[in-house]
Length: 144
Ligand code: FES
Image (cartoon, rainbow, N blue to C red; front, side, top):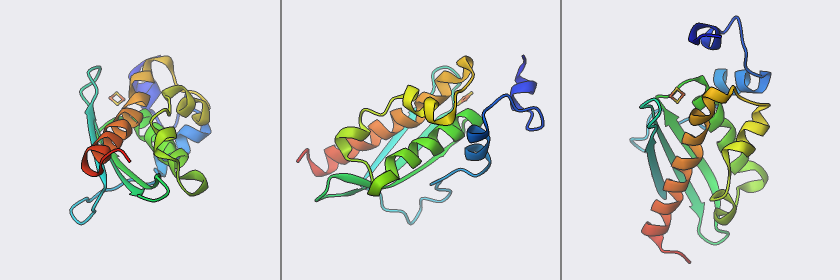
């Protein structure tokens, strides 16, 4: 297997779920200039140098995340993983902050129907940026 095979959309080695989230990413934010988030998280991957940004909006009473936007300059795996992560966060009227802090790459990969082992580092970017965004929110609004 080489990089061309992994990235060739006519020769997918990814699951249908990964393909779907890569081709139709959920909750992506292309222009944040007029977007007011409660928390912003930015991380870079030491493995490949790609970047990920996550923006969240929090219901201050319920302590849940009701919007989870993101953008990356990463690969198909990073796009699909973060799209799935944002979907998971927004299910059932939004995940509580305390629960969202503990989303794991394994849970995301599981929902995607798997990822090639060498793409694991791409799947961590979304949840790490989410944790940073939650941290930013807590610093902005206090841990109540
Ligand atoms: S190779 Fe950089 S995020 Fe996947």
